[in-house]
Length: 380
Ligand code: COS
Image 1 (spheres, rainbow, N blue to C red):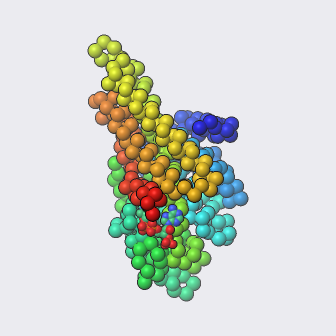
Image 2 (cartoon, helix red, strand yellow):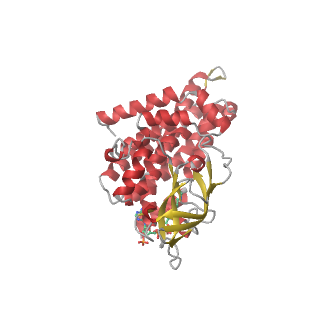
Image 3 (cartoon, rainbow, N blue to C red):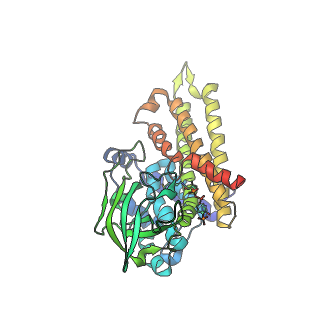
């Protein structure tokens, strides 16, 4: 795709920020401690990155989906975990509020999210409701001016340090499946809200993930988001956009792997010449680059068409995530292969990319869920 001058400038800005600020010391610290790094969060916030896609009237930058994709891609190229820092507020965090929040809710919650002052996370998954998100068991029962929430959300990225969570709960117990689910904005400091242990993850280390436990949590009725019993659609619409972001993350990781591999192949000597001279290596690199280009065009084109209101957006976002995340894993595999034994050592970037790549075919819907979305669009 040929970019406008504005998008070229944005790409440069995101790339320069990532290359300057995501130092190897910072990346090692994230990996070693597993803790959320407030300093880099604040720096990103200062640049307005938390609100790239949030409209200007709610304190954001008012960027389009292509700007958001470029942000995630350029950040992930250097650090997949730090791309998540700037992703949530622009995607799953603000998405449901923008989609179905009333004016009062938008004015209350969006500006502090856009400025990075507050962190809001998305709590849909439950121990028994992963791919089958409609089988939510968390309940919300009306009681005067409140709803009383009970249940457990699991694998919630950012929960341990979040200010608010967007919680999906069943409000109509008579309706099964995805019907009868409503959305609530839950203040994480409310009595009865707690978080579970920090999960020890394979990758994306430095962005803690935990359960959210809701034990008789009284949420004001004013924090019901969107129509009663009809919250599932907002989750699906939000996930469409989120999946495009995760496709961009996979693209960024794959680019990082390719760049490392090209550099290494031109330096590393075996049998008296650099390994780039061996067809076994050079053909792997050719395949990596070709797949990356295919994903890139699909993602950018989907971003533009989504903003233009294409009726095919949901299917295209799922296609972009399916293809980019599977591609990213193939590319990361090849990168480690090119590095040989060094690719298995933590000092080398491709080792981390390889572990971080693995989640891209899982979160925000597994590859099989994307296949469900795509095939249902085609077959009904
Ligand atoms: N946009 C708008 N509405 C949508 C939609 C979309 N993209 N996708 C589904 N809907 C609506 C449907 O129209 C339907 O509405 P009605 O109740 O009015 O008929 C409702 O949502 C339920 O849709 P569907 O019947 O397709 O739901 P299923 O229970 O079969 O689930 C999948 C569909 C599998 C696609 C869904 O559960 C899903 O995305 N699962 C993965 C969840 C996920 O990504 N988890 C990661 C958590 S965040 S890290």
